[in-house]
Image (cartoon, rainbow, N blue to C red; front, side, top):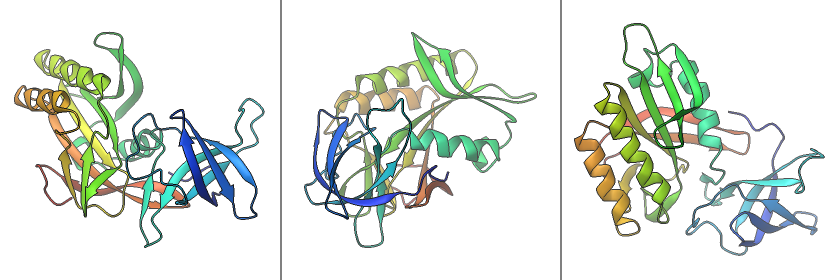
Amino acid sequence: MRFETPLVPARLIRRYKRFLADCTLEDGSEVTAHCANPGSMMGLAETGQKIWLEPNDDPKKKLKYGWRLVDHENGHFTGVDTSVPNKALRLALQSGEIPELAAYDTVRAEVKYGQNSRIDFLLSGPDLPDAYVEVKSVTLSRQTGLAEFPDSVTARGTKHLGELAEMVGQGHRAVMLYLVQRTDCERFALAADIDPAYAAAFELAQAQGVERLVYRTRITPEGVWVDTNACIGSETKI
């Protein structure tokens, strides 16, 4: 998935009210960018950090910049926009690039299901059970090479796991897909110390038949793409 507008580099001044970030552009001017990330962004919102912003000239938007990437300045990037994984994954699903789901020929996004919820993707195909695919963006890393989810308590995520398990009970496939939006991680684990309820709900859902997939991403200031190297298993190389 390529960004619609070329990104511009900046330095973070501060992130506040979850969805706002004051930044300094290369010419020294200060701007406020939209931060499309409701999580804690632990380790990703330090003052002075190099980041990349996407400008826009949409008159309907109050803020003329969106925060897209953290540049770790060592050749690695983290994607902080939680809407990007769904955009990138939709392209990968439609082109059959996810081996475990490549047999499905119809991809529908944001379909209502469960208790007032919407599944990220509902896949269907001839002679196949429908596949309900929930996507989570993974950006937390507290140990070198290890990506973790979640970075804060997520009651909504816990609810989704229960609803996925219900879909399995009705004879469908249900997939929890974690998309690691970091290029510096090769392993994945649940952050049970941050949200033990989510970790317990995941173990229960998996026991009931919910599948887990973990995929890496390729990230540059030009765009974000799903890598085809998947991982199944706790703290396993991806």
